[in-house]
Length: 187
Image 1 (cartoon, rainbow, N blue to C red):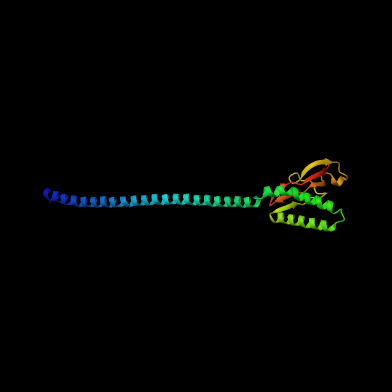
Image 2: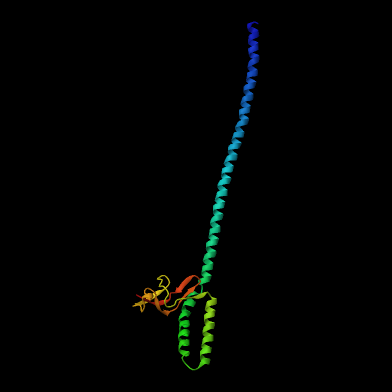
């Protein structure tokens, strides 16, 4: 083989190598868009995940808001008439005092009439959520429930720190104490 033949052979090889190189470049160019597509797809997925998270947080906030306002509304309905009921408590006390005095008289019909009105009045308030706080002599004194108006020496050792007398009844409206019972405590 002479030099001329060798050079022709080399020239023939170069185009083949060039074709291979062109093909490699083409493949790398084809891979680049796939990588770009993948990165775009990943970016879109991240954006979607971020928006889902925002949506879920906003939805949870809204649900909490609904629960809170519903609870506040229910509490408002429970205690809506509190001012009116508190202003009627002295009238209930007057009924109790009147019944106590009328029971001493001989006119039993008058007692029955006033007792009927008093019971109807109490039942109406009870239907609105008013409940008497049961307190009697000998009960343990609880500063969170009872209002001690005075302390006197206990007539018995058993009544030390206990309630000796109930001066004024206490009432609750729902779970809230609207008037504490006024009591005398033994010391």
